[in-house]
Image 1 (cartoon, rainbow, N blue to C red):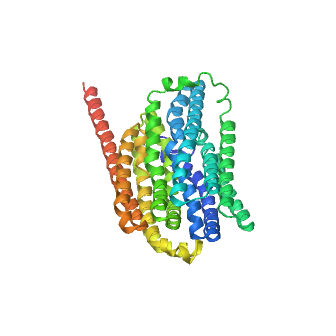
Image 2: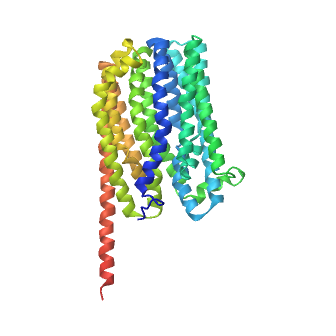
Image 3: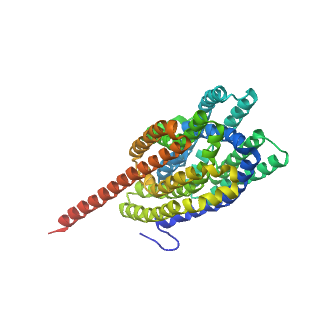
Length: 449
């Protein structure tokens, strides 16, 4: 395989992709620490809990209905690009954009029901509930997954990094404005909503500039499922996979609020958000390496696929292990610095969620292997098993141990997902190796006189 400077290896391309993602996310990580401190210190534990529940509800619904269309664009778009079929790629992209819009509209209905439950259970005012609903609508309609897929398909990770940087930048200045005007929850919701709208606008602008003309015709859009074998199956599986992953974690935050109150939800959310800043490393790694797994699978490059699996696994395991070790050491000083003494009760939860984050990072190299090689259903089955364990643990432990029980359940679910994904990826790699050996033996026999 050509690994000259002009033709980097798949792992080299994956690292370059991750590097661009880190550029945007690294900038955001610094600002997120600042605006998180502004929110927690300005609102206090109770109001931060209310802000948390609205945010978690919107994010859970978005993950519940979203189809992760960027994966569809990358997986099937790679085939269209290899064939030089620009019309087919256009139909695929338009279909995915329509899917995003339909999912957002369905999500608005689900959010209305969820906020009514919170209104009834926690005694929110009509104004609070309406503000929460408006935020959910804005977040859901600020969809950009298809635009993300267009940029990643064309390896424009630098443009994606710039678009990602818009979110923390707008939130930072919005939080400053909210603090200066002594705004309550509504002021911070406005800042977060503005960040979603502006990020989506930048992503779509970048995508249409990268691949102009893909949205010029809509009449033949519904031909896309017939032209891309297994598209509906892949779309549903990725939707369920995300629902069982991201949506379930956000839903746990909502459940904590429903059963233990807004203040406890705020502490859990703070610990969750700090741990998720680490999980974003795994998310960036998975997003950066997924196109390379798809490329290797589309070209039947078994040797390159095995090398990529091996190299990405070593890196993910090292970063994940470091996370598991550092969170217990740095967690308490981080909470004190960012949120203050009133939030130190979240430290035990942060330790549990931080170790769970480390396991999620370790698993980051395994799930893209299954998704990128057409084994999305297997990845879904594993996520389903882990999600059952998560909610089973929450329902079993939270009545007795409160928010700490929810943390234990989260850690157990992450450990289970890591073990199952690792086992599946190892079996896949061994199967590819055995097939290569069989093919090599047959070729050797064929060459004999």
